[in-house]
Length: 91
Length: 207
Image 1: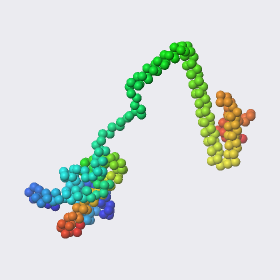
Image 2: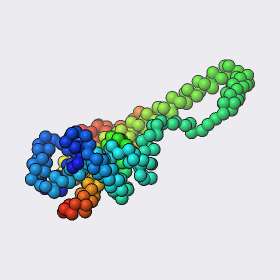
Image 3: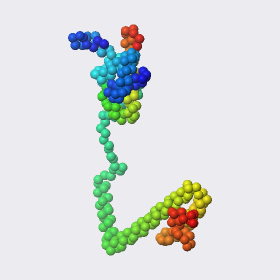
Image 4: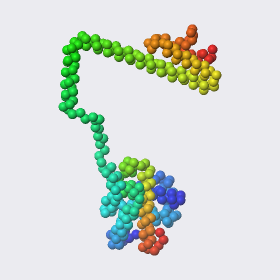
């Protein structure tokens, strides 16, 4: 990862990669089915607790955690596939 | 630990919510599985991107907006009366009640009013007494039923029929006795113990 240069400052390419990653994650978020996307948005974008999300959606706490984990996995796999496309390495 | 199980634990690991033993097991799996290691790294990047990117702050869907509205809405429980009666109507009703009371007292007089009240109290006492007697009968019926059932459970099937017949006779005795009769339903056998006592103790079948 090109997050920081040896001097401690952010590498110029790192910023580009971060933006691209954010766009990729955003696109992946839109592609998620609502039952996975909603708890993820409430948790990671809105900063709501698992308990609050469970109450708002009317589902058990364990279901909320499971769906959030699955949603993150979906996005992570999407990110890996995109990287593999760019680098030519297997994902 | 297999890869599928490892993936299930990523969020808990990120939250620091894993049991130490499970966390160590996951670490061992990640150390030996390059695929899961890469996935775990991407997993962390996704969470970081979601939590820090300001452009992602807008909820992307209707479901999220609905859920957010539910979370933001103040949880106030509004209690509405079943029927809203205007104040002027309440005041009019109160005035009418006072006028009616005054007119009644003027017509019947204080003494007649007192007698009516006494009669009302007396009738109330009679009704209450009758209800108490009915309650006592129900309690007694339940006890007798318990005796019949316990006889059946004890395996004395031949005695169950006798208990049922005794109960029938008790009901007939009750019908013959007026509600205020203190002897109602108490004596089953002409010169013997009371029916209720016979049921409770099971003395009839033991003798």
